[in-house]
Length: 456
Image (tube, rainbow, N blue to C red; front, side, top):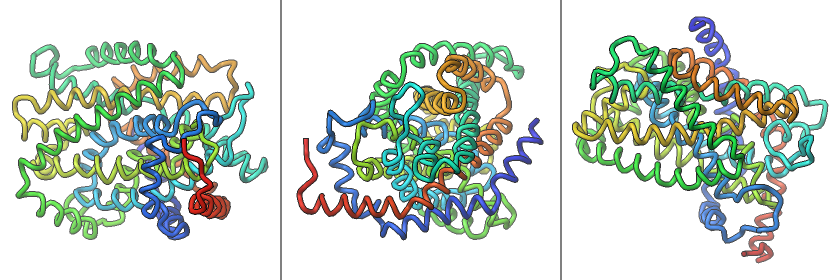
């Protein structure tokens, strides 16, 4: 199974997908004339609620939509995904993650604008958003196979396997093994932890989207402050090594010598894969969440969503990567993703570092689990209807237990393959409908300049 998934992931993440994601994102950034950077001030005022219409269609506020999307993106991809990328591709992976994130800001702007512009209705008559509706509403019914492809891939891409795997891994490494509770055979302990996680997630999960959004909007700010504070301490404790690490990142990005033996293209692909897993720009999951936002102004939603790759990858992933690099653990530790990050925390803060990371991982993993289940259930109901929706919830909870006991390589390759297939409909839709987004953007900016946009 490991070999099969590795081959599938390698084939899916070939040159065509790299061109679609990074080349497509670069085109969108230039096409919109750097809107994500020019409109940052206005987007902050939107997030502050100054343009929030309480009577607009949707279930959650734009801030809650961003917090819920960040709950899935600022998660294990930032703690473990970066470590996996450096372990497999070297320090240069970080540079290509930055490139992916910058063009991803434009991608998020376009896809999440479209998520409001082309919302559909489910079989119950409620407003729904996401790439499956963007495709059929924006491109027409003849494009429906792309909607089905996205929804089917989304069933697997949004499974909680990675989060469950890495949470059990760090608890085992930091708590259980040092205390002698478990030895080398961790199957039973992982199974028990998986069952405990499944129980906790089900309590929140069956409360619906509003409970998920409420929990996410409270936990996301706290987890970002706690994690970034800890990582900044590690970086400043080794501040003299930071300039050298930046030099190493830039050098390795174009040589690939550190881990890949000069295979630069593999470093680029690894950077794109890890950035996509981390910030999900171009994948389409965020469009599903933003499609539920209480917002009748599509462009406004895009201006909110564009912050996600910046916060997730440029800020949080960079800090994690620097913490791993400046402590030197990347050269001596090829552990299971989160194990490398834990080693960096332990190196810089011997007494409390690893335990702080356990708390961070716990929050990151659980907030991701809530959002991912919502994404997966939307894909499921699009394909099979609401009649069997609870079956998906039970399946999702079961896969938490499975994720706790399988290997990290299987998990990474399965999720990467699913994300690759999700990106095809999302980016195709964004590129083909980009003229309509730009027309709406020009109209919105003209009204804003004329003072016709109402504040609340």
